[in-house]
Image 1: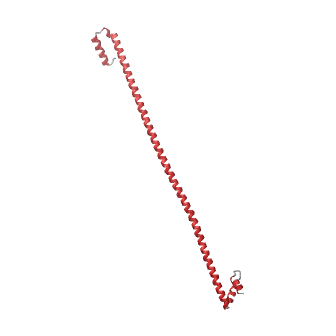
Image 2: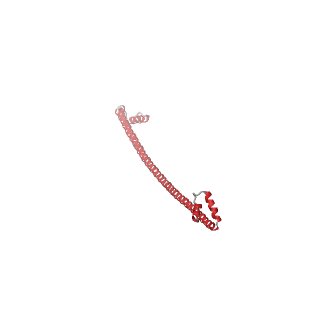
Image 3: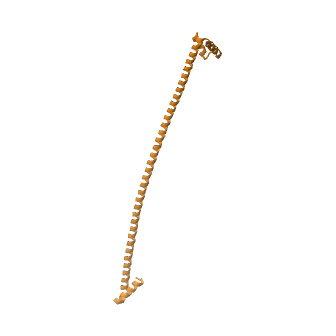
Length: 179
């Protein structure tokens, strides 16, 4: 009978008015009162322990969730750092490749300049050689022409002259530029 009363008092489906009336009736009876008080204390303690357990479980879930989020964030940060390191390394490699390409271009340019300089020197040497050859040929042609004119003079008008007159006349002609 006490169990039935306790069950009715702690049944949440029982209307509040009935539960309170039964509780007051049990409190008036000293035997039932101590049983009710002890039962209430046990139920309250059980509810308190359940609430603490629920609170602990909620905190544990929150902690687990935070740990998972932190692990995920750490993994993302690590991936980001790895990506940045990889980009930095790639940028350094690209920079070194550009520097090597610039050095290669400089060497190629120097070689071209040297080749162009050598080619220019060769052309200048050829021009000089041609000019020297032209001058030599022209001087030889001029000398032959003078010799021819002198011979014509000797064979023509200077034929009747004495050797001294002829040589003087040839010298004057050479000085005046007639020959």
